[in-house]
Image (cartoon, rainbow over all chains, first blue to last red; front, side, top):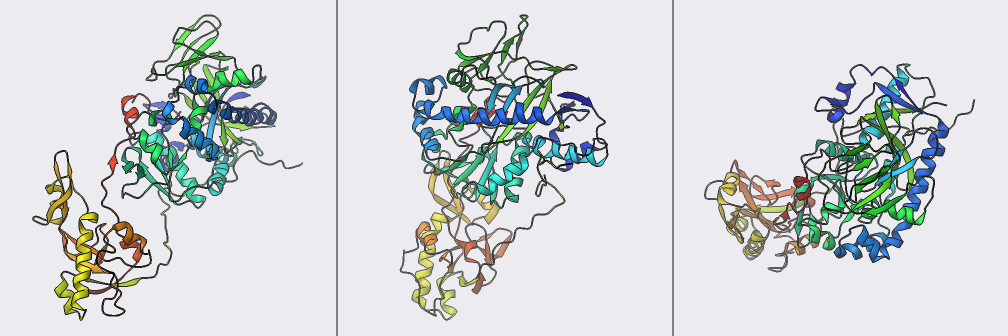
Length: 382
Length: 204
């Protein structure tokens, strides 16, 4: 695993704009950064990332029946009791799931360490599946990369297969928060792929979802029987339409059982069951006390590094503010992100259905990866 | 040299995110069905239809009218779409007063009144669910409306133009299926996003 500088493609910003990737630069700071790429060997990709991703995914799925059978664990995960039966039913009836992303600390050798599962509302999908893919094709065409250069990125192919094969209600609706152009970009990309797979898709703003007699409805009052929502389950369970979830005949993507896995509490539960697994870090449920050297504290529900606190082995304390102060916490042994130049690098590994589907890399100037971190492409050269 | 399978997608194409590529969605070829459109029962009878069947179809449409007419929170909004003096109070109330709806300006008789004599018994299709259930291949008898800026055209409650003169017209049944006026509660999701608006994305 190496970081290599490369010339950006001339005019890539215009191309990005033309395909709806308007958030490539945020507040004059680059988000998409193609001034360098990361290079992996095929063995690093297959042995150290792809295989562990699928194994960890199965380990996480295997935990679900245990959690559903344990009131203590459901409470530790802060799942509202009102929804226990609903979530159990969604798991037992085999409600299909579409995708997720796990984040790893990995420097090219030794086992990749699982930092967390983003299994409910993972983003940076378009950047990974489309924009990074096009970057490689362009650089190959320009002769900037040697012929035969590859990329671990079957994301779009696997999403298209999933949309073609999953038993989804039609028309299938897609929804995101109105004000977030980034989330709309992610949903547009998913709808585009779903359309290519032959699905009848419609978009509705999340705030426009309606309720008639407990049934979720669209703008015309027609029932919504299938809905992809780029919005966290733990938020939905606290909001005015929480009751609608229980009564509405709606198939959800992701299904409600994904709430168990997107929860940081899954990390101590994985450690309890598979203690010593090479890809797992020691993790425990915790209270809101400051952590010791060599540990990270994370809220059960948090996104983009918010409300994360860590203390390095040498005692340096880093904290990130955020709005997720109202749930419990876990602590996890610190596996510091590897440093390349001035940047700390995180690897996101995608799962579609139950298969590993590619990776994305994020660079930050701190050990805590945030929404301001840069996205860099990668290649495989053997 | 042996070729190993690629680790990346065979293609990563976009269809509708590309502004240049227009999407052409072809509906299935749905058969058009004949229906008759009139302002009043008398006008219907003048087209050589049995007067009692005209009256029955009118009554049926009138009964459906308060169930399907589009709803407005106040009279001004309603009149902006349907014209001054063209709106009336709807049966439902909200916190600030009554909902408003346009007045019925005509009716569409789904069956050919004088041939076949299949006018449904009065009240049978008065419930929108029943009307829809009676078959997506037929045209349910229903009320019609006229918008402020186009007084010649008869429109259904869901704003599908069906005719610009009385008499027989041909329409696709799927375009004119009555449905309940939308009185859905909205805004029940999204509050947490508004409260915690520090992140630019609600994913992660």
